[in-house]
Length: 396
Ligand SMILES: [Fe+2]
Ligand SMILES: [Fe+2]
Image 1 (cartoon, protein in one colour):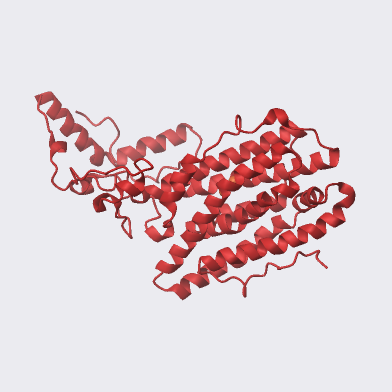
Image 2 (cartoon, protein in one colour):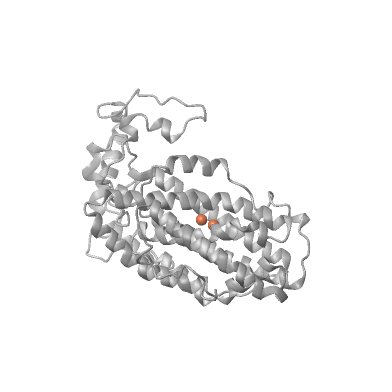
């Protein structure tokens, strides 16, 4: 066979974010031309063997395989916990070496030298993504999926007085904005995690689905009630601080412990701020999903800190990150487009907004306390260092 592409030349790595253009296509051609030796030898060997009419059947050789070690289902069915009881499949390396798609527990060693390398698989330390509850949370997430089209009794949505409808729709606009980053953050990191940590990838996939459903349900609630209202720069800066966190653990801490902790507190207040049966049902369902994400975040941070070779240094890095992250998130927490509608919903009308702000001050203190308690559970004491006020800025 002749070389179907030009000979290798030194080229920049493929810029995957480019829209498909002549330039993008040229990059792609050059990339595979550069690695021509890697894959063309395989292609030529295959071609020759097929032309000779001979079979390889090397894949039937079980040397180095874990052939015959059969997983047994438990009462729930066949879970990852069940397959992971077989050590050859269930032992996660502390440090991943395979930056490709080769399955953990498969026969992959003989092919090591001929495998491609995926440059964007960069999360190679288990304890930067792992949490001991991830298998249970994954099972729970699959069992509790719901459908924002069908499972919410939209037909029973009652019209509200204009102040309450606007407040509800503004809160839904905020939540729609927030739910987007809650999906984009795990999506960004899922792609960077190699195959050896497949259970975490699976769990993050459920979180992405959960967040897609959340942004869907709040968008639909707003549009069914009155309409989307105001996007907000304060929210956007907070979301940017999450998405651009320098490590997975840091971003997970900011998203799952702080950001989603706030959302969880809002959902928990559902009985007070949800003004229709439909809204209560939306909050109730979202609350269950968010509890899983928060639970993963707490244990992931704990795992990261417990495994750090120098715990003090790891804590100091997290503190430096949190010093910035908390302040940026505080920008969102203090935005009028969030605080005012929640106060109106708590009090029951625009006329009682002062009363609502007092009620919200109690929620604020409770929320910050809950946040510190989550940090404590992860072994990350923020109480002394955090500059987030324990009392709301307007509290007397
Ligand atoms: Fe969410
Ligand atoms: Fe979430």
